[in-house]
Length: 265
Image (cartoon, rainbow, N blue to C red; front, side, top):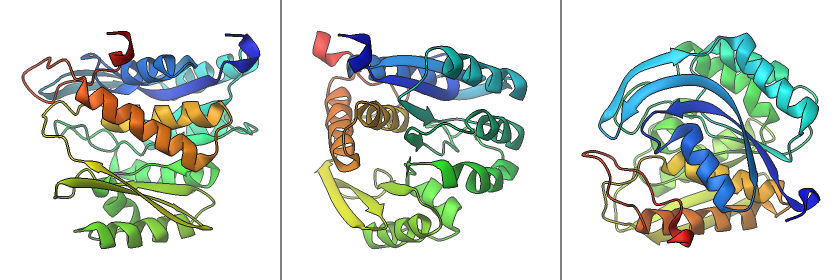
């Protein structure tokens, strides 16, 4: 693939020692979808499929330095933002991305699959104030959507209303993910100021769902970096996620990783 046709995706996120989520899932996803992955690591987590036992934040100036080093040399066609940790890192990321004109996919990572808190309470306000206005797309799950809108989300109708409320607060589109709701069908809603689009897929009965949010956000960012329209990038990202879920290798004793490399097997 020629360099000028290779979507360059800068991932701003934490490291998952278990390899299922965070920058590890992001790199696998971007690579499998034909992109070139670069990273700015925000935190080192001590975790496996059973949960997170420790988090070590990277100094904000090192986070922003990684971003600037990549953008000044290689450049980026899209940015995916995941785990940020605290308000100081949110501010550092926002400052380092000043002037970046490409699409930004913001995955507001707040709680790990095993229950560990990954975003400090004081950082939510900074995220809403500094990064949400810059984002092309924000991809909250139901608990995150509840926090960001200060509303209760109990069903699909609540989810859509909350997504509409969040989309009205900024230029960003919202992909509200319904995986935490009940039922045999998983529904996601893509909400923009021009309207809504509903996506659905059969729910897979599997405990191996670690890294689904990271994977989907990075898949969409890769599509946007390649020039795909937003709805097409979302549809392709969801298809990749479904295939990776179906190919989960069954590792670990808890929430296991996806099969990101299913196409190679």
